[in-house]
Image 1 (cartoon, rainbow, N blue to C red):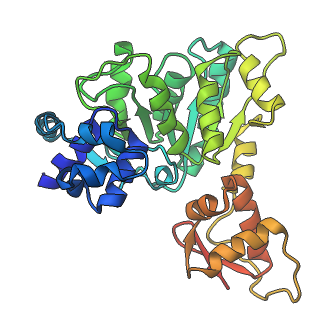
Image 2: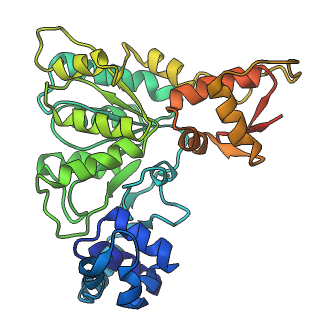
Length: 366
C-alpha cells in the first residue's frame, strides 16, 4: 500500500482531533502529509486548533499504530477509504462530520444507485419482523442495497431478508473488523461478504463500547438515500439515527403501530412530530423516492413558454446553471432539500422541458 496511507490512518489516530478538525487541518495544510510536517506555530493559527490540539499533532506514536493497522488491512483484504478518495461513499461527503477514514470488507459498491438503511428496536415483535421481511421482498425488483447495524431485532431481520431475496446488504459496525458483534450473528455476517460487506470507521482492536454506537449511526444515516424505522420504543437508539438523518437532509420514513404498543411508540412519535413520513408498504417508499421512473421514460422536450417556477424549482435551476451536469446527490446538498423533494421537483421540471436527465442520476438544463 502507498506511503500516503500511513499518514491518512495516522491522522485519524491523533488524540483530541475528530473528523471535523481533521478535515480542517488537511484543508489548511494542503495535504495529509503536510499536516504532520507543518510548524506548530502555523497549526495554532488554524481556526479551532490552538496550542493544545497543535501539540496533539506532534504525537508521532500514531505512526507506529498506523503501520500496524496497514498490516491488518493487507492481511484481511480490507479496503481503506479516505474521505478524499474517489471510491469513498459520495453520499457521506455531504455530511460535515462524516468519517475521515472508513474500512470496508466487501464486494458491493458503496456508491450504488439505490441504498436504504433499515433500523429498529432490538426487541422486535412478530409484527415488526413481518413488515421488515415483506418490505425487503417487495423491494427486490429495484435492486436496492440494504444497510443496517447487525444488531438484534430489526437489524438482523433486515440483513437476513436481504440475503434471502438476493439483495446486497452491508452492516455498519461499532468496532474494528477483527471481530463481529454480537458473535451470534457471525454466520449471517459471513454470508454478507458474498453479496455486500462490513463497514466501519474504527481500527482493529476497537471494542464495541457503548459510546461507539452513536458514531456508527451517523454512517447508517448518511450513506443511504433514506432511513426506514420499523418499530422503536419511545427512547430507542433508532431515534438518534433518525435525527442524524434529518440533519443530513435524508428522507426518513416510519411504519406506524398501535397507539398502546411500546415498540411502536418511537415510530408514532416520529410521524407525529413530522420527523418521518408515514409509509405502509414498499410501494409508498418507491413512489416517494421516485424509483418508479425509468431511464426509458419519454418526456416532452418542448419547453413551456413563460413558465413560472416555484421558489424551490428556481433554486434547483440556479444550481444547474453553474454546471452542464449535476448529480441528484449534489443537488440535494446544494439546495438543502431532501431526496424525495428534489426527485419530485426534477420530474416536474423534466416534464416541462426545462431539465433533462443523464446516466448516473445526473441532470442538466435543456
